[in-house]
Length: 627
Image (cartoon, rainbow, N blue to C red; front, side, top):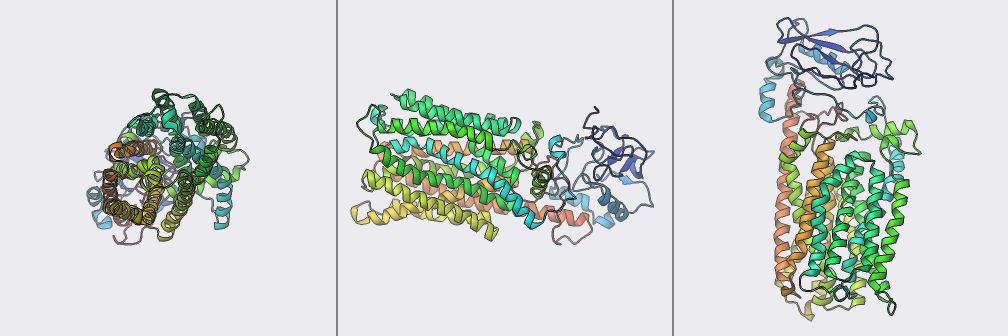
């Protein structure tokens, strides 16, 4: 079978541009001097050897099949611009005529000239604006499986979109919501057991209890990128099911732990296997859901955390009543919930699709529509090839590091309060064990309400970053109150109310995650970005409990002071990221308008032809950031 990719590395080589599969294309050849190019319609008979679907292609024109989609080295696409040194040598072909022809016959590359009268010196301006530049030599590496299920000519009506969304929701949402609920529950069992005598049974002293939370996140830091890479190259349903099975077994075996060293081992293993969850769910969200649906989807699975708090409080109270047996109440809790997780792994293996293209029980026609409905995302669906250029770009991209620090600043307070909430309510505010468990139920209900409110406001206002700022402010107020108001019986009610305000901060994380999935293109870059993001998430969660020093109990004023600093810093970072996105979009809009001969401030018109080419957000000139 001919190679599915065709590289044309030399300046003297031709450039073949095609439109839809099997349609007639245009052959671009260098002029005699070797420095220009002329557009020559090329026809013939037979199947073009560069066709990516050579086995099934029915194209009848030599070198004209759109599936070839190759570019020569001396064609660098800069928002559709041929470099300034390239001239169209055919004087009878005007820029407008050429562009009109290319708009009809190309789906992958647009070519223009540096005609200063027509483009108002656009190329120079474009380079100064910092618009995307594709690599000098481009070998198209669109995933073959995805390619077979793309058809830009399909029109999907709003009613059809709703039907497809229901199909996706039935297959994806139960998996991610239940799995995240179990992950949150299993990871939080130590917190539930903290008022059941686990410190005494495991012989924990001083800061050792805090380290049981910290070591989970240190393990996540080490395992995060390998897990993300595995999600990119392995069947996602099988790998997720395996990790769920493994961490369920680890949780069940925690019942046998008798000392700090054994506890550290099971907690490290738990972190290694559980860290697959959120990156996996973000990839699923980006693969199946459109941009405006992603905040809602991420908030839905994050609601599992709030539901876990409600259910965890009930389970904690129920297991606490089991006394007098051979096992401690928390040991019984570990065994039962661990085995429940093991059983759920089998359900995930059966229910979760391997990909939109290999989903069991979905018609071939619907598979094409499921792929095409996310074309507008411009972030791709699937590509298993590791691309070093994507890795380099991710490491140098300021938005990736902004998300990293957002996660650090978000999870330092969340991680600390997650481990010490029950202790603060019981010891600091003076509530009983029963009252503490019942308050956990109230906290979970509030958290679910916060998550859905954040998602709704994000969609309604179309201002995700400003909504994130708004949900950070109540926590900032709470930290100030705990630092300034005396902790005595006269203020217990007010302090409890203010403490519950910190739950609003839980709305920040899913909004941040949804921005990451919507604003990072290219499969390898997204994998690296998600890994960096969750390394920051784990770093913050590991550091958070360390703010609560045993010597500072029961008021923990130093911890609340540290959290106050996090709240202020994250608000400033959200605002800075918003300014960055606005500036990037403005540059791209102006460049695109100048190219097409429009006023610089004209309304944006987005081309979706590069959506599945596995280009990064910086490589794709048609990409626009959402915020």
